[in-house]
Structures are given as C-alpha cells and as structure tokens.
Image (tube, rainbow, N blue to C red; front, side, top):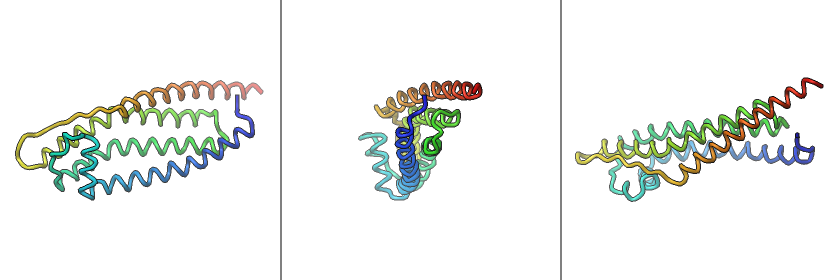
Length: 182
C-alpha cells in the first residue's frame, strides 16, 4: 500500500533533508579522516579510541600514520559508498518513488555496507596496531584486536536492513506486476 499524499509529502521533505545531511556527513567524514592522519594528536586519539589503553604505549611515527591512513581507507571507502547509496535512496523517496526495485536495491546495498563494517572495524584496528608497531623502534611487535558493541550493532542493524530490503524488493516486484495488469 502506497502512502497517502500527506504522508508522501512528509516523506519527501524528510528525504530532501536527509539527502543534504548525508552529503554533508560524507564530506565531513572524508575531511576529518584525512586530518586524523595529518595531525599527530588526532592519530593518537584514533589509536586510543580503536585500541583502548593498550594503544597508549604505541609510538606513532610518520610512516605509521601513513600506513594507518591507508588501512583506514578501506573501511572508509565502504562507509562512503554506503552513505552514497543511502543518499540515492533518499533521492528516490524525495521523487515519490517509494516502492521501487531501485529503492530496494539502494537499501540492500546500504545494508551490505553496514554489515561489512562489523568485521572491517576490528580488522582495521588490528592492522593499525600492527602497522604502528612495525614502523616503531625495534622491540616487541603487537597486534591488538578490539571488538565493541558498535561492531555487534553494525552486524544486527545490517542484517535487519538486509531483511527489510529483501522484503521491499519483493513488494516492489509485486507492485510492478500488479500495475501491469491495469
């Protein structure tokens, strides 16, 4: 069942706002992530956030920051791609195309990127810890793996979104099929 005109108008307004919010978020995430590896104190804060107190003793060299930035680029690219597709979903909704296969595909792609963040985040943290110890002075090398409730939530939310996208895709197919009978 399609939304009433009043509900569709509210969805259109919300979707237009979310298009802008998503775009601004993508730009800020890109800029702040780059700054995180340019400014040593920000890199230290990232390491502490990812690895906790265990990361407090890791020396952060220029080479370490460069490698950590390259490692972070992988989950960052997945995140930005997910935000790009959810922005396209909001564009579909803003145009009044709510129950379409394109909207379902955008939601499905976003769901997969959210699911992918669950293992990517801890793996990136482990790779960053290894990169920082490898580029540091001689001594013991360390790999730290940190798993948080955010990683678990990404897994659950991604799974829910994927299930909803699958249902939405089937509903869109049925709606298109029914429209062809008329």
